[in-house]
Length: 296
Image 1 (spheres, rainbow, N blue to C red):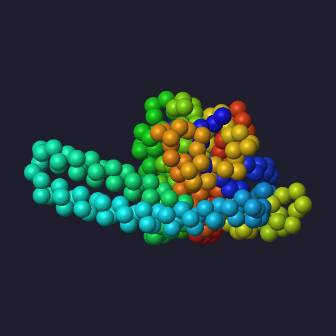
Image 2: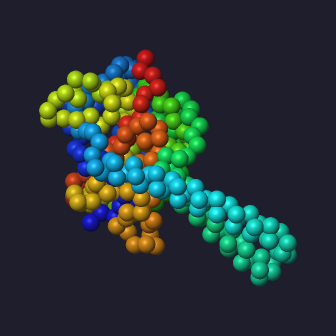
Image 3: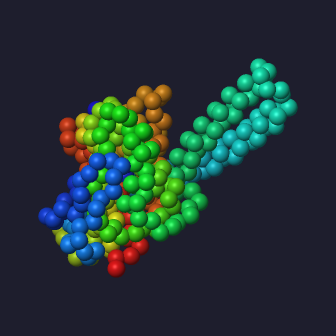
């Protein structure tokens, strides 16, 4: 069974019309070189998998609950942190009580990190959107993502040149990337290939009326970020749950089950959609659709 945290509309196969290759495969840490004959023109419309389900309504209820709990817990953490800092200032360095207070402070910071993941899942974070090119963000993040993945995982970057921009919070998208890399690393048990891919996608209104397809998002122009691994894949019975908070196949020490829940919340709060394409034994790929800021 794949070791993964947390889903809503997961498991729907993303069927696309055949398109020419739009990216360049390269080693992590190097940027793609645009090809002179490529134009920033809309790609062919994709035919994709639909609508609100009981699972989606369940996720909305979980989001409201997690947001309420996270806000109260964060307030308590702030009180504990403030008083431990005040007490630490009154105790000379090197004294045993000072070490105890520092341990309390460190534990509180870790707790606040968990609270941040819960707030991200509940879409309760304060965002500072900026115009962002995901190609540039990925290139600038490769060094830290490589360290996060570990030496035994090969990072590959596939970038579409002249990528459209998206309007998102840079810090939250960085958190999203880190969570997905950690999720893939754990799924592959620290050994395998992790691929990050960007491309522009146009979803057409007429596709929503087809009997054999449904849309991953509203019709329009999107930048799609895909994160794929060569792990064991996700069992079908788990796909609907992988984005739920505190759902995990790991032990209680290894994972809290909040990584993918936070990813889901960040994508939703950014106006996008996320789907997981996985087959047991063939790895998993998370596809994130973010509305393009411009398509000109």
